[in-house]
Image 1 (spheres, one colour):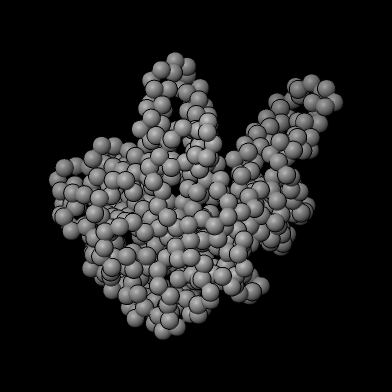
Image 2: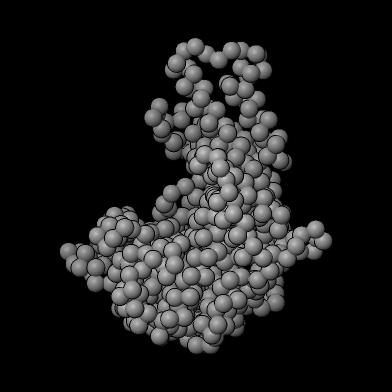
Length: 521
C-alpha cells in the first residue's frame, strides 16, 4: 500500500452531485464526497484534510493509498492495489510541454521518482537548437534542488539515469507544428502513449496576443499533433479552477463549450467567438503605430478589457477558458483529462516540504509584509483563499490519468483540485500565520533583517481605498500633501523613486487580486 501521497477516500458521507465542487464552503462538510484526499499538517502539528475532488465511484477503505514517512524526502514508491496508478504509468512514453515550469517540473520529478520503470519522457523545450535545449534540460531540471532526492537515490548513475529517460525536444507551443523537427515529430508520434500539456502563460495581465497564443491556441496546436500519434491513450491538460470566471456557488466539473460566456445572460454581451478574439488581437498588433512599450500596454489593456467584458477576472483565466473550449470542440475520439487546480503554492511533502520556484500569487504580499514594506492590502479577512500544494496537484493528476486511462474510453473528464471545502483557510489565517513566522524568523534583505517586527496587516474593502492608504502612508505621498519639492539629493531622490515603484506595484497587484481577495463564493 506504500504509494502516492494522496489518500483515496476512507469513508464516504452523503455526497453532493457527482462531478462538482462547492465554491468556498457554501455547503457543510458532511455533504462532501471527495475521491482523493491528502492529510495536511502545519508547524503546530494540527492535522487537517485537503480534499481533491474527482468525479467517479465511491471508494472502499481497502482502496486507500497513503504515504506516511518522517524522512526529509519521500522515498521511491511501490506499486499499490488501489487504482493501479504505478502499474498504469510505468512502461509508457510521455510527451510533456511546460516541463521547465513550476507544475511541469514537479510532474517530471514525481514521475521519475515514483515510476522508475517509465519509458521515454519527451520534453518540449523552447530553444534555438538541440544543444541549447539540452543545456536548459540540465540547468533548469536535472541540476536543480527539486531533483536532489533523485540524485541521492541514484548516486553516481544519476546523470546516466536521467539522460536515459529525458529527451529534450526543440519546439514551442506557439509555433505551427509545435516548431519541431520533422524527424523528431515523427519519432514522438510513433512512440508516445500520453501527452501532458502544462505549458502556460500564468501572468494575469500579460499581452493579449501572447497569452492567446500560449493558453488558447497552444492546447489546440498540441491536440492537432496528438491526432497524429498512433498509440496515444490519453491527453492531459492542466487548466485552472478559475476558468469559471466570476461565477459563484456550486461549480460543476463540466467541460466548457465553445461560445460559452460567464456574462452571457447580459443582453449587451455577444456570443464569445474565439476566432474573432484572435483576429482582434492580431489586428491591433498590425495597426498599432506607437512604440513597442506603448503596444505592450495597449495589448495588456485589451486582454483585461475583453476578459472582464465576458465575465472573467483577468486575461489569464479568460484565455485558459478559451483553451478548454477548443480542446473540447476539437478532441475527436481522444480521451482527454482536464485538471483544474486553484492557487498552486509550494510542495507540502514531496519530494520535500516547502519547495517553490519563482514568485507565486500570494508571495509578493507575504514577503512585502514580512519586510515591513507593505502594511495594508485589499481583502476580506473571511475570504477563503483556495490554496493547494503543487505536489498534491501532481498526485491528483497522475491518479486521474490512471483512472481515465484504464477506462480506455473516448471522452473528456474534468477534475477540480481545490481546498476551499474540505480544508478552508481564510485570508486572516494566512496573514496571521505569516506574521507569527516572520516575527520568529525575520526576513533579511540588503539592509539586514527586519528588526521592527511584523505587525498585523490592515485590510481594505477595495483597491481604490487601499491605493489612497498606501500613498498616504508613504514618504512620497506625505511630501506631496505638504507640497514639498522633489529632493535635490541624488541618493534621497533614488530612494523616493524606488519607494514610488514599490507603491505602484502593490497598487497594481491590489487591482489584479481584488476579485480573489473579496470573493465570498
